[in-house]
Structures are given as structure tokens and as C-alpha cells.
Amino acid sequence: MPELDYSNPELNQVKAGDRAAHDWYRFVLSYPPHLVQSYLQKFGVEPTQQVLDPFCGTGTTVVECKKLGIPSVGVEANPIAWFAGSTKLDWSPDPAQLIASAHQIAELTEPLLRQHPLRTLPADSQQIMLKNSISPLPLHKTLVLLEQIDRLATYPNHHRLALAKAAVSASNLRFGPEVGLGKPKQDAPVLAAWLQEISAMAEDLRQLQPLKSTSAKIHHADSRQLLQVLEPASIDAIITSPPYPNEKDYTRTTRLESVLLGLIQSKAELRALKQGLMRSNTRNVYKADTDDGWVAKHPEIQRLAAEIEARRIELGKTSGFERVYARATQLYFGGMTKHLADLRPILRPGAQLAYVVGDQASYLRVLIRTGQLLASLAEALGYEVVEIDLFRTRLATASQDQLREEVVVLRWPGKMPIWKYPYA
Image (cartoon, rainbow, N blue to C red; front, side):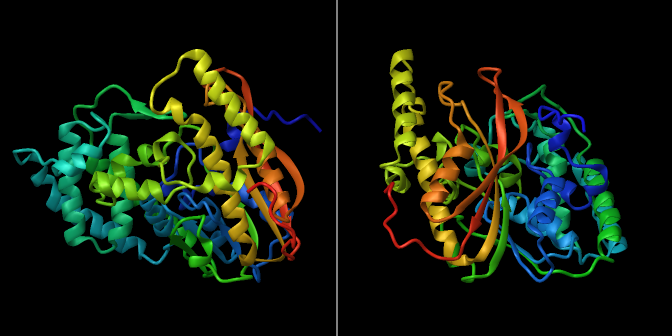
């Protein structure tokens, strides 16, 4: 058997046969449906069982489970991701009516696009947009179309999600590991792009609707407070990818569409959103945060924090964000520990878990072995560490080193440990 090339970028791409519903809206660098398929098969998950994705994102795990007839549930705190994932689970629209409604909206919208003055966002919303993320004319077209969708759409969620994807394609944003600005687009065919997305949705619905109806839902909630939304002893398997400890701010990556759809409208709402997310980057770290208490005595995490801080001082880095690198690392692993602790009552005995995580070197090139640390934290909480599988390698932006992206495979034996958690 030939050796697998773990640096092959195709490992993380959606296969042509898997695109239905998944392609309606995805995060950049989301893990692919075929990874979900592999672990469902590896775990031997049956249609009588239930799968959880506690860091649901745009719904890769739950959408794939629904396709395969396996009941599933997700939890997601970011409103645009929750909205996208929930819409991707809704296969009820009649495809012909979806297209007919869209063409009616397009016909009424087209003459309005030439109106002046150009539409723009309210001042509070403009303040939280990434500067120059979309040019005035494409923004005007998007807002005019959105108004007609909200007024006339037969299936408003699907029409709005298609517009979110079309607006991103009409924007000045470019996506690598992080979001940035590309060459400004003074104009863009927003209406045509939206109709194209609607057409693709309708085609997918024709393919998906004959499938057996299966329970699938995403809760809009914090993954560190799962007991508020999930029943005890209700989960047989987990396939998920939590955020990694780096500077990737998903509220920034999705800011354009979040603001355009009215899901975030002010600095206060943005702050509230960030406070409900896992602390994985310095832009959502707050003085009152206490998750780091969960790992106050973990030797390797404390060593890493000390090394990051020492490197910062050595390099003379003094920005506000750089000063928080060490604490952000502690808060991230503390938050993951709290998540794993609160998860235990929700799992059935013998539950199997797969956490897709990646090594990081974002904080002044100090290497963080995320998978190994997550496994040690889980083991201390009573989980069995089955194995750590290599999924792929990826190139570190700062150092150009190959970093491991791994799947930490755990098993919950069903009995809470009687001893005190050692790292708090």
C-alpha cells in the first residue's frame, strides 16, 4: 500500500459527491464530510444512536449524519454559523417554488439596483465592519436585495443564506489562514450570484429530499455549558473540531455576512458574542475570565505560558494583544477542560469521541502540541485515550514548518472518577 501524503491539501477538500447541502455555506478550512464518514464507520455508529458536535460551526457533522440517517445534535455559539448550519439541515423547501420565488424577487429587485443615493449600513453596524471589506456599489446591491428577500421570500432562511455566500463573493475579502483584503471590486453581479446559489440549493434539495427523514438540530449555545441544552446520557458519539489556540477570530472571518444579515449590529452585541465563545484568541480574552483556573496546576500548560511570556519579553513585544498570548493559551486549555468535564453526564457509557485539533505556533513561534495536551486533560477527567490519529499536516504561516493536524480519539467508560481533578 502506498504511503499516504499527509500534506496533500485534497485531504481537507469536499469530494464532488459530498457537496450537497455542505456547499451552501462553509467556513474556510472546515474539515471535510469524508472525515465524518470515516469516524462514523470506525465507531460503528448505528441509526439507533445519537451523535453530537459541540463545536458545530456550519454543521459538517450534523449535515453528514442526517444524510446517512443517523440522529445528531449540534451546539454553536456564533449566530451566523448556527443560522447556516440550521438552514443546511432544512430540506423542506419545494425546489421549484424556491427558484420561482427567487426569480420573482430578482425581477422586482433589478430596477431598484439603479436607485440613488446608494444604500448603506447604519452607523453602529458600520463601526464593526472590517474597513473596505465591501465596496459601496456591491453593498448597495446586497442591501436592496436583502430588503426584497425579507419582504417577499417564500423560504427566507434559504434565500438569506444564499445571499450571505453571494455577498462574500462580491466583497473585497480574501481568505487564507486568516481573512484579509484583496483588490477592491468596484462592482459585482450580486443578483446573478445569488440566483446561481439558489439554483444550486434547489438541485441539492432534489437529491436530498428522497432520503429518510432523520432527527437533526443545532442549539445556539455555549459549548462550555452543554447541560443547559442537552439531556443527560443522550450521546453515543462525538465528531467535532474545536477552535485551536491561535489568533484566528471566527467573528472576524464571518463579520461581513453577520452584519449584513443583522445578526450582529453593534459593538455591544459583538462583545456579547465573543464572551460566549471558547477563548482561543486574544480578541476574546477578558479580565473577568476564569477558565484558566482549570489548568492552574497543569505543568506543561504552565511551562508553555511561561515560555511564551519569556519570548515576548526577549523580543520586546509590547502590544496589548501580545501581552495576552500566555493567558490566552491558559484560558483556551482551561475552557476545553471545562467543556470536557461538563460533557461527561451527557455521554452514554462507552461513548466514543473524535476531536480534530491542530498543533500551533502562532504565539511567537512557541510550539503548542494541542492534541497531546487535550488528551492529557481528558485522561485526568476520566476519559480513556484510545489513540491520536494523524489527519494531515499543514504549513505554519510564521515559521513555514509542517504542523500536525490530529484526531484525538477518546472513550467515556461511564463512571465519574472519585478523585479530585488534579490540575485545578
